[in-house]
Image (cartoon, rainbow, N blue to C red; front, side, top):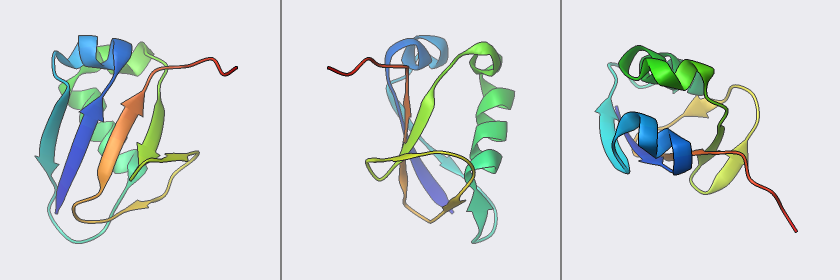
Length: 80
């Protein structure tokens, strides 16, 4: 399974990347599994506040992730 990641703000600073592609074995994973992999790869993210968007839709809580989904890690933002 291939997942496309995009990083913004402080998340991009911690990863030193704006985007990347990661691979998982099997056909079924969850957002928590993606987050676990990211925390193992980029330990600074453990203490960083960020939100997830899957295919440009903000996600709260755990959800399933599909092959070729685009996941964005977004820093906190203010509306107005």
